[in-house]
Image: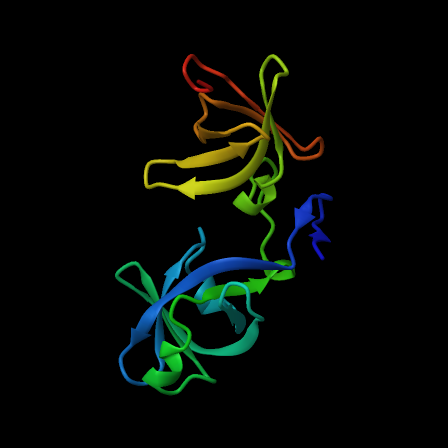
Length: 179
């Protein structure tokens, strides 16, 4: 069940911070793609959970973590061989939501945006924000309603306001955006 953060917003039980890409070497090291704005987090935390989508989570203790060429090499106490590491290929790397550091006021984690109602500056309801697609240049918000799906660039010219308390994101519906 989602918890409440200090500001009263939604706070999930678990937050995905990475995905296991593949084993690295023969001693059970995992090569992980960090899905966090804080890749150094892996050097700070002591425990994490691995899970395959749709299956239960398993708790692991971090022995050593380092960042190499944009990936995190993660040695866990419970995984000692390449064969054991191979079992976790593609797994999600998660931490409890309670361990996620709070951001300064006015900043949000992407998971805090999911579920917001999206409306134009004129009050026209577009739909609910259901997903975020990350690209190198900027994120794109996926907004769905009963009839269709919209892709909204997450840029300052388009996203005018995010009111988490009201559960509403207001966008500038420039020509062609909602066609």
